Length: 169
Image 1: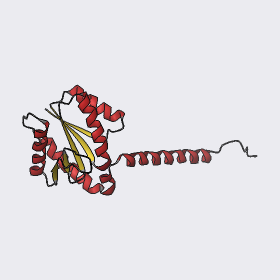
Image 2 (image 1 turned 180 degrees about the vertical axis):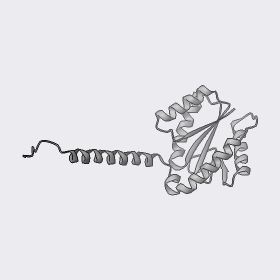
Image 3 (image 1 turned 90 degrees about the vertical axis):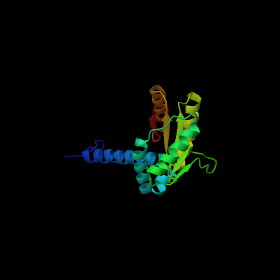
Image 4 (image 1 turned 120 degrees about the vertical axis):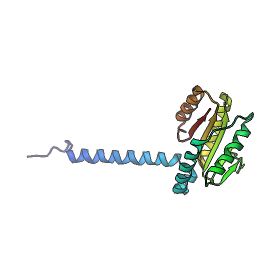
């Protein structure tokens, strides 16, 4: 029996397919790593523990009625400080950035009260910047579902869907 040099053997096809799968896995991992904040790359255990604790505490928050956004920010900061073991900084103003609430120097929270489109666009820009350094969440208060959906879609369209959106009435 003579081998046809132009005929592909099954083991060659398997090697090629395996190489493609490994390559796709590597590209996917590099893309996932690229969207991680510096905090997540430097100390993933602390980030995971902080986010888990704050997620549980934030789920229980019931914002009072206030006039201005700053009042909600200070209320949220005080609530997180009282209800969690984390270090909470309100409007810390670090190196040209100013998240509304910074938790354990790993989680930035940006608070918006029924924002208009311009405020939402600005919020996305702010949070994109914060997310390079910290895990970033947006906290929306008294915001209609249509705006929340629009914001989540915008974040996804800009590959920023790692920025979580929390909504409170």
